[in-house]
Image (cartoon, rainbow, N blue to C red; front, side, top):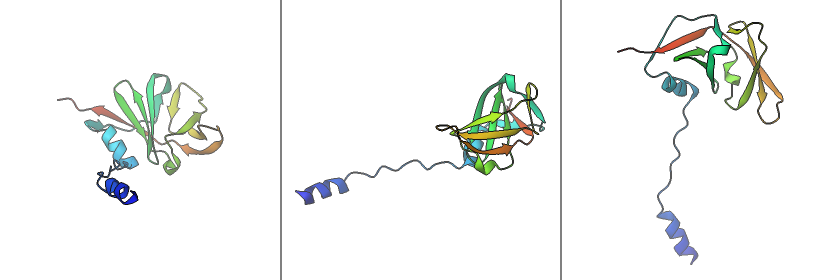
Length: 126
């Protein structure tokens, strides 16, 4: 009976997991159909409707239909499951700001990243 079971399992097709995208691949997919504009030093945090952390690569802020990509210093420490904290000195998030990262489950300090300029990506108009 053990031989039959082993044979039965061998005939089951192997399920292949989809390959995990690298941070750069995930960012490229997110920005498909968009073109980069001139980098800006600050964005309005209050107009930001969504924030996406791309593991080890970038933070993407959505303002209206524009995606602002920030590639901070120490980006390799970015994890999409971390909580980001920033102390604001105005209503804008700027390239001189520091973002602290914390573990989502324990809220323990994980590190920080220093923001850089924000590159706007807008949809290509046909």
